[in-house]
Length: 338
Image 1 (spheres, helix red, strand yellow):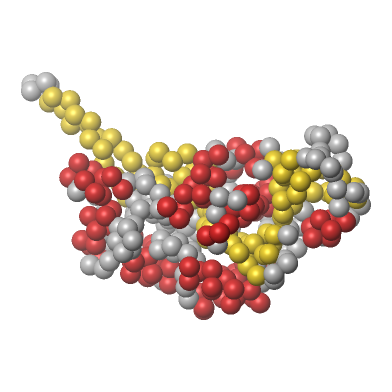
Image 2 (cartoon, rainbow, N blue to C red):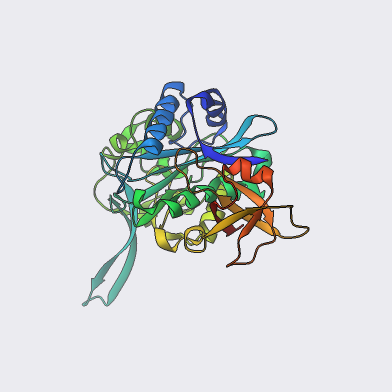
C-alpha cells in the first residue's frame, strides 16, 4: 500500500535520495541536505500551526510504500508564492506595430518580466520514481495534496500556479536559458537552477532584463522550446491539464517551461471531491479507483482504494484501509474518482 502523508525529519535521507534523482529545473527540491532539512522543518511548523488565511506556510508531502518502508515520491505546496519577495514569470503578450501610411499592421509576440502571480498558492516539488510514472500512484502524489486543500481552504489562496520544468537536452543545456538568461548571468542553465534552489530564484530574476523581449529576435531553438515540457515532467503536466489548469499566459524565466494556473475552487479534485461518512466492512467485489483522504492536518493521509461507492451513500472501507487513513466507524473522509 502507498500512502501520501506529511514529511517528517526522519525522512530526510530518503528525501535527499529522491532529490538527487529529480531533473534539473526542480529548484524546490535541491540536492542539499541542509536546504531539505529546512524544507521539512518549515513544513512541520506549517502543518502544526493554527491558520486562518494563507501566509508564509509551506507543506511538503512524501509518498511512502508501507510494505517496503521506502519513499517513492514527494510533492509540496507553498501557501503564498512570493510572500517575502516577488514571484517572477514571463508574461506572453502581443505588441502591435503599425503604420497607416505604409499600410502595415504587425502583431509581435513579446515576453514581459512580471510578478502577476505573486500571492497565488504554488504547487511544487513533484517527483516520482521512474518505475511509477504513468501509474495511478502519480495521481495520488499530485492530486492527493489537492484533497488537503479541499479540506483546509482557509490555508490557501483563491488561485494556484505551478512552474512545470521546461525543455533541456541530455547534457542539461536549455536553449531558452542560453538565448536570454546566460547573457545576463554568464552561467549555464544547470548552475542557474542550482543557485536558484540553494539561494533564491528571485535574486537571479532581478538580474534578468526588465524590458520586453521580442520573441522573433530569439534563435529558433529558443522559440521552439517556449512552453515545452521536460520529458520527465510530462506526467505532472498532463495531470494538471486534466485538473483544469491553463498554460497559455506565462512561462518560466529560466527554461521557458509553462507556468500553469487555475482558480482553486475550480480545480477538479477540489470541486468534485465529496466529504462522506465511513463505515467498516468487507472489500467490494468490484468497483473503481478513488483517491481517499482524511481531514486532518499533521496526521493527514491519502491513498488510492478500489471502492464500490455511490454518491450520497456512506463509504465502506476495509479495516486495513481505515487504519492507514487513521479513521474509524462514523468518521469521515474526502473522496474523488481517480
